[in-house]
Amino acid sequence: MPTSKRLNVAVVGATGMVGNEMLRVLAQRQFPSERVIALASERSKGLTVPYNGSSLKVEELSEAAFKGIDVALFAASGDIALMYGPVAAESGALVIDNSSAWRMKENVPLVVPEVNGDDISDNEGIIANPNCCAIPLTVALNPLKKMAGLERVLVSTYQSASGAGRALVDELEEQTKAIADGKEPPVAAYPYQLAYNVVPGGWRLEADGYNEEEVKIVNETRKILHDPELRITATCVRVPVPIGHGESVFLETTEKITADDARTLLGNAPGIVVQDDPHARLYPTPHDVAGKDEVYIGRIREDASTRHGLLLWIVSDNLRKGAALNAVQIAEQAIQLGALGAVKT
Ligand SMILES: NC(=O)c1ccc[n+]([C@@H]2O[C@H](COP(=O)([O-])OP(=O)(O)OC[C@H]3O[C@@H](n4cnc5c(N)ncnc54)[C@H](OP(=O)(O)O)[C@@H]3O)[C@@H](O)[C@H]2O)c1
Image (cartoon, rainbow, N blue to C red; front, side, top):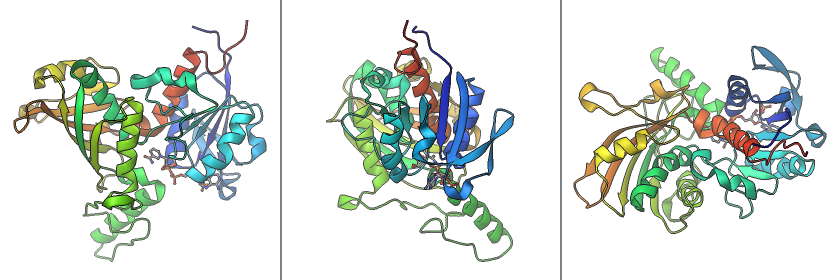
């Protein structure tokens, strides 16, 4: 492994749901940092955010903030990533961006370390962190694809409020309290009331009735798996859960794979925990998976309506593996590959 120096790290959007989680993950994994700076909008300048048992003072995002930074973890909007990503890269930082702004650009690797970590080496200064449903989906699909080939994927998501940022998490709590108090729940952060409801939308509409999130899952899954022709479709639904996305997945493989073989294969695959014994009521739920690093898989069944069909229920923490953890794992793998912090000898 190449020798690496300790790194200066910037977290952009440090006051947000993902930014907060990034700071927690950096500290928990003892990321080899020399200095960590927290950046956010002008509104947050001077506030503090928790980091490693202490706190960091939030600085306003500016071009000058990236001076001397080795790795810039972006957890703000796509506009911010488009505006400041190239600035950070030009000043010598490796940018790892959580927004969707760079994900489908040709010269930008879109990386899930367990699946296509080697793509990191092809970067031109910016690496994209995939969508919070595409990450766990590809972690699950990759070993099955390698073992039996992948023909087709249908996915329905059950996405938590935190996937839409802090505003919806706060609103879900306010709505729940208002309903319990017999009051009219406030509805502002999402097009529909989320408490006591499920909402099959809320994302920007795209062509043919699909929404932005569904298109992202399709395109990003194909890019991560290096399978541009993969037959895949998605339906995205927001559910009144604070943290943790669920995905009901139907897939068809080229070769037959039994449910037992899939259970063993997935159980031995990196980053996956199989929790699958319906008789013992053992299957993953967002409530239990929130705060965990791995992708949890249960309800593994063969589909009797097709020859090579398999059904899975996937749950992962959207703020950790779906965002912050995956971004930090990319940085760690970049260090291992000598693409970040390498000391020339
Ligand atoms: N939530 C998820 O599960 C998830 C998963 C994967 C990817 N993502 C992506 O990650 C990004 C962050 O999501 P989030 O859920 O953490 O959102 P969030 O909770 O709404 O946080 C947004 C962050 O962006 C900062 N920001 C806003 N305007 C800014 C500006 N002009 N200059 C600098 N910083 C600015 C905010 O700072 P202030 O507090 O100062 O406004 C805040 O720190 C988004 O692109 C999102 O699509 C989210």
